Length: 473
Image (cartoon, rainbow, N blue to C red; front, side):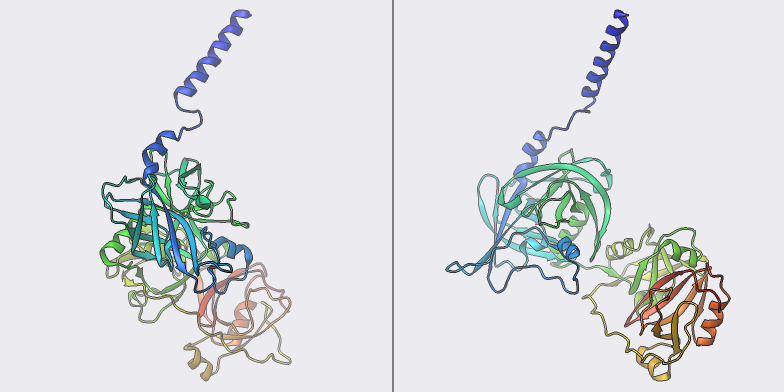
């Protein structure tokens, strides 16, 4: 028995030794920091105090969403007797020995003076080569030579659960090292259509912004850009721009001073499970086209509202957030093949990609009609009326039914003043032209039917799914 116990103890010891030999102990970041830390810089900016330096995000009232977009640069307001300047802190990293540095666009936004400090205490004034607010990437330059530079990695090879390291200047504490793991890849964030963010649980705080995210090989795989926080401090949700995206942006900034992006002129939405059922799609995937801008590349290519784009330029569109990134990364003027799901079948189209210009401003809402005194609601709990000639002309529509009242038992997420253009059920699409047609169509459906309405609200359209109808009267 003693022999067996000894044998078991020796076996356990051998297993533990093997585990250590195979590198299963906690990772050691010392070599990484020694080799790469010198290429990370501290960036401080000075701005004349023209107004309060508080990020303003229009048309967003939800405090948690606002907090999501608060970048991590502490901005100070001048007090009595202070100089009329505001200072901010951020991070960056050297990508060429002659002084090109990557950072975030919001770090240097509106700065009158940019100062770069190296780990050996040398300080330089920097000039802005270019900045792209859509991806939050900026390229700056200092007049120096022989600088230490970072090595670049491949974010596509990153795996969820892999160790990563951030180096930056949180709260001004220079060359602070924090570590964690990759929590997710390809994250889409509100208002951020062109970046498939890397999510990590690395401790990121104000001042880390613009600093590098390293893999365990000491290669930069991302640029730390955003945090989700209710307090402004670290809460385990940090987001980095993949380095391949940042390098593509900096290349364009160096060559042209600006970034050009592709566009095709469509408004899209996510395909939910119910929408997939309504359109006869095998599963929720792709980007559902709500509307197509007249004379746009998509319009000329024959893309139609209610098409579901499943592939673009050879790349799979798994969710609607994939399409803006894929199209945006396509060079204007390039010809791209588009695969769409239309009326129960796959079609292939060719589109010549245009160039994305300034963002469009939301237009006015459709004027509302008075509530009818005595009018019965249909099986969706909606009261609708046909568009007159003047309304069609004003809204540039050929058909549709105006929602004049929404009853308390309404089944659809539709508002008074919306225009219902189309009904989709079991892959079949019906343009709505008369109230009688709509009532008859609803009357023929089972009470558990799943259908989708194409709804026009102001100048925008969206698809609204309805699960279940009122019993027939």
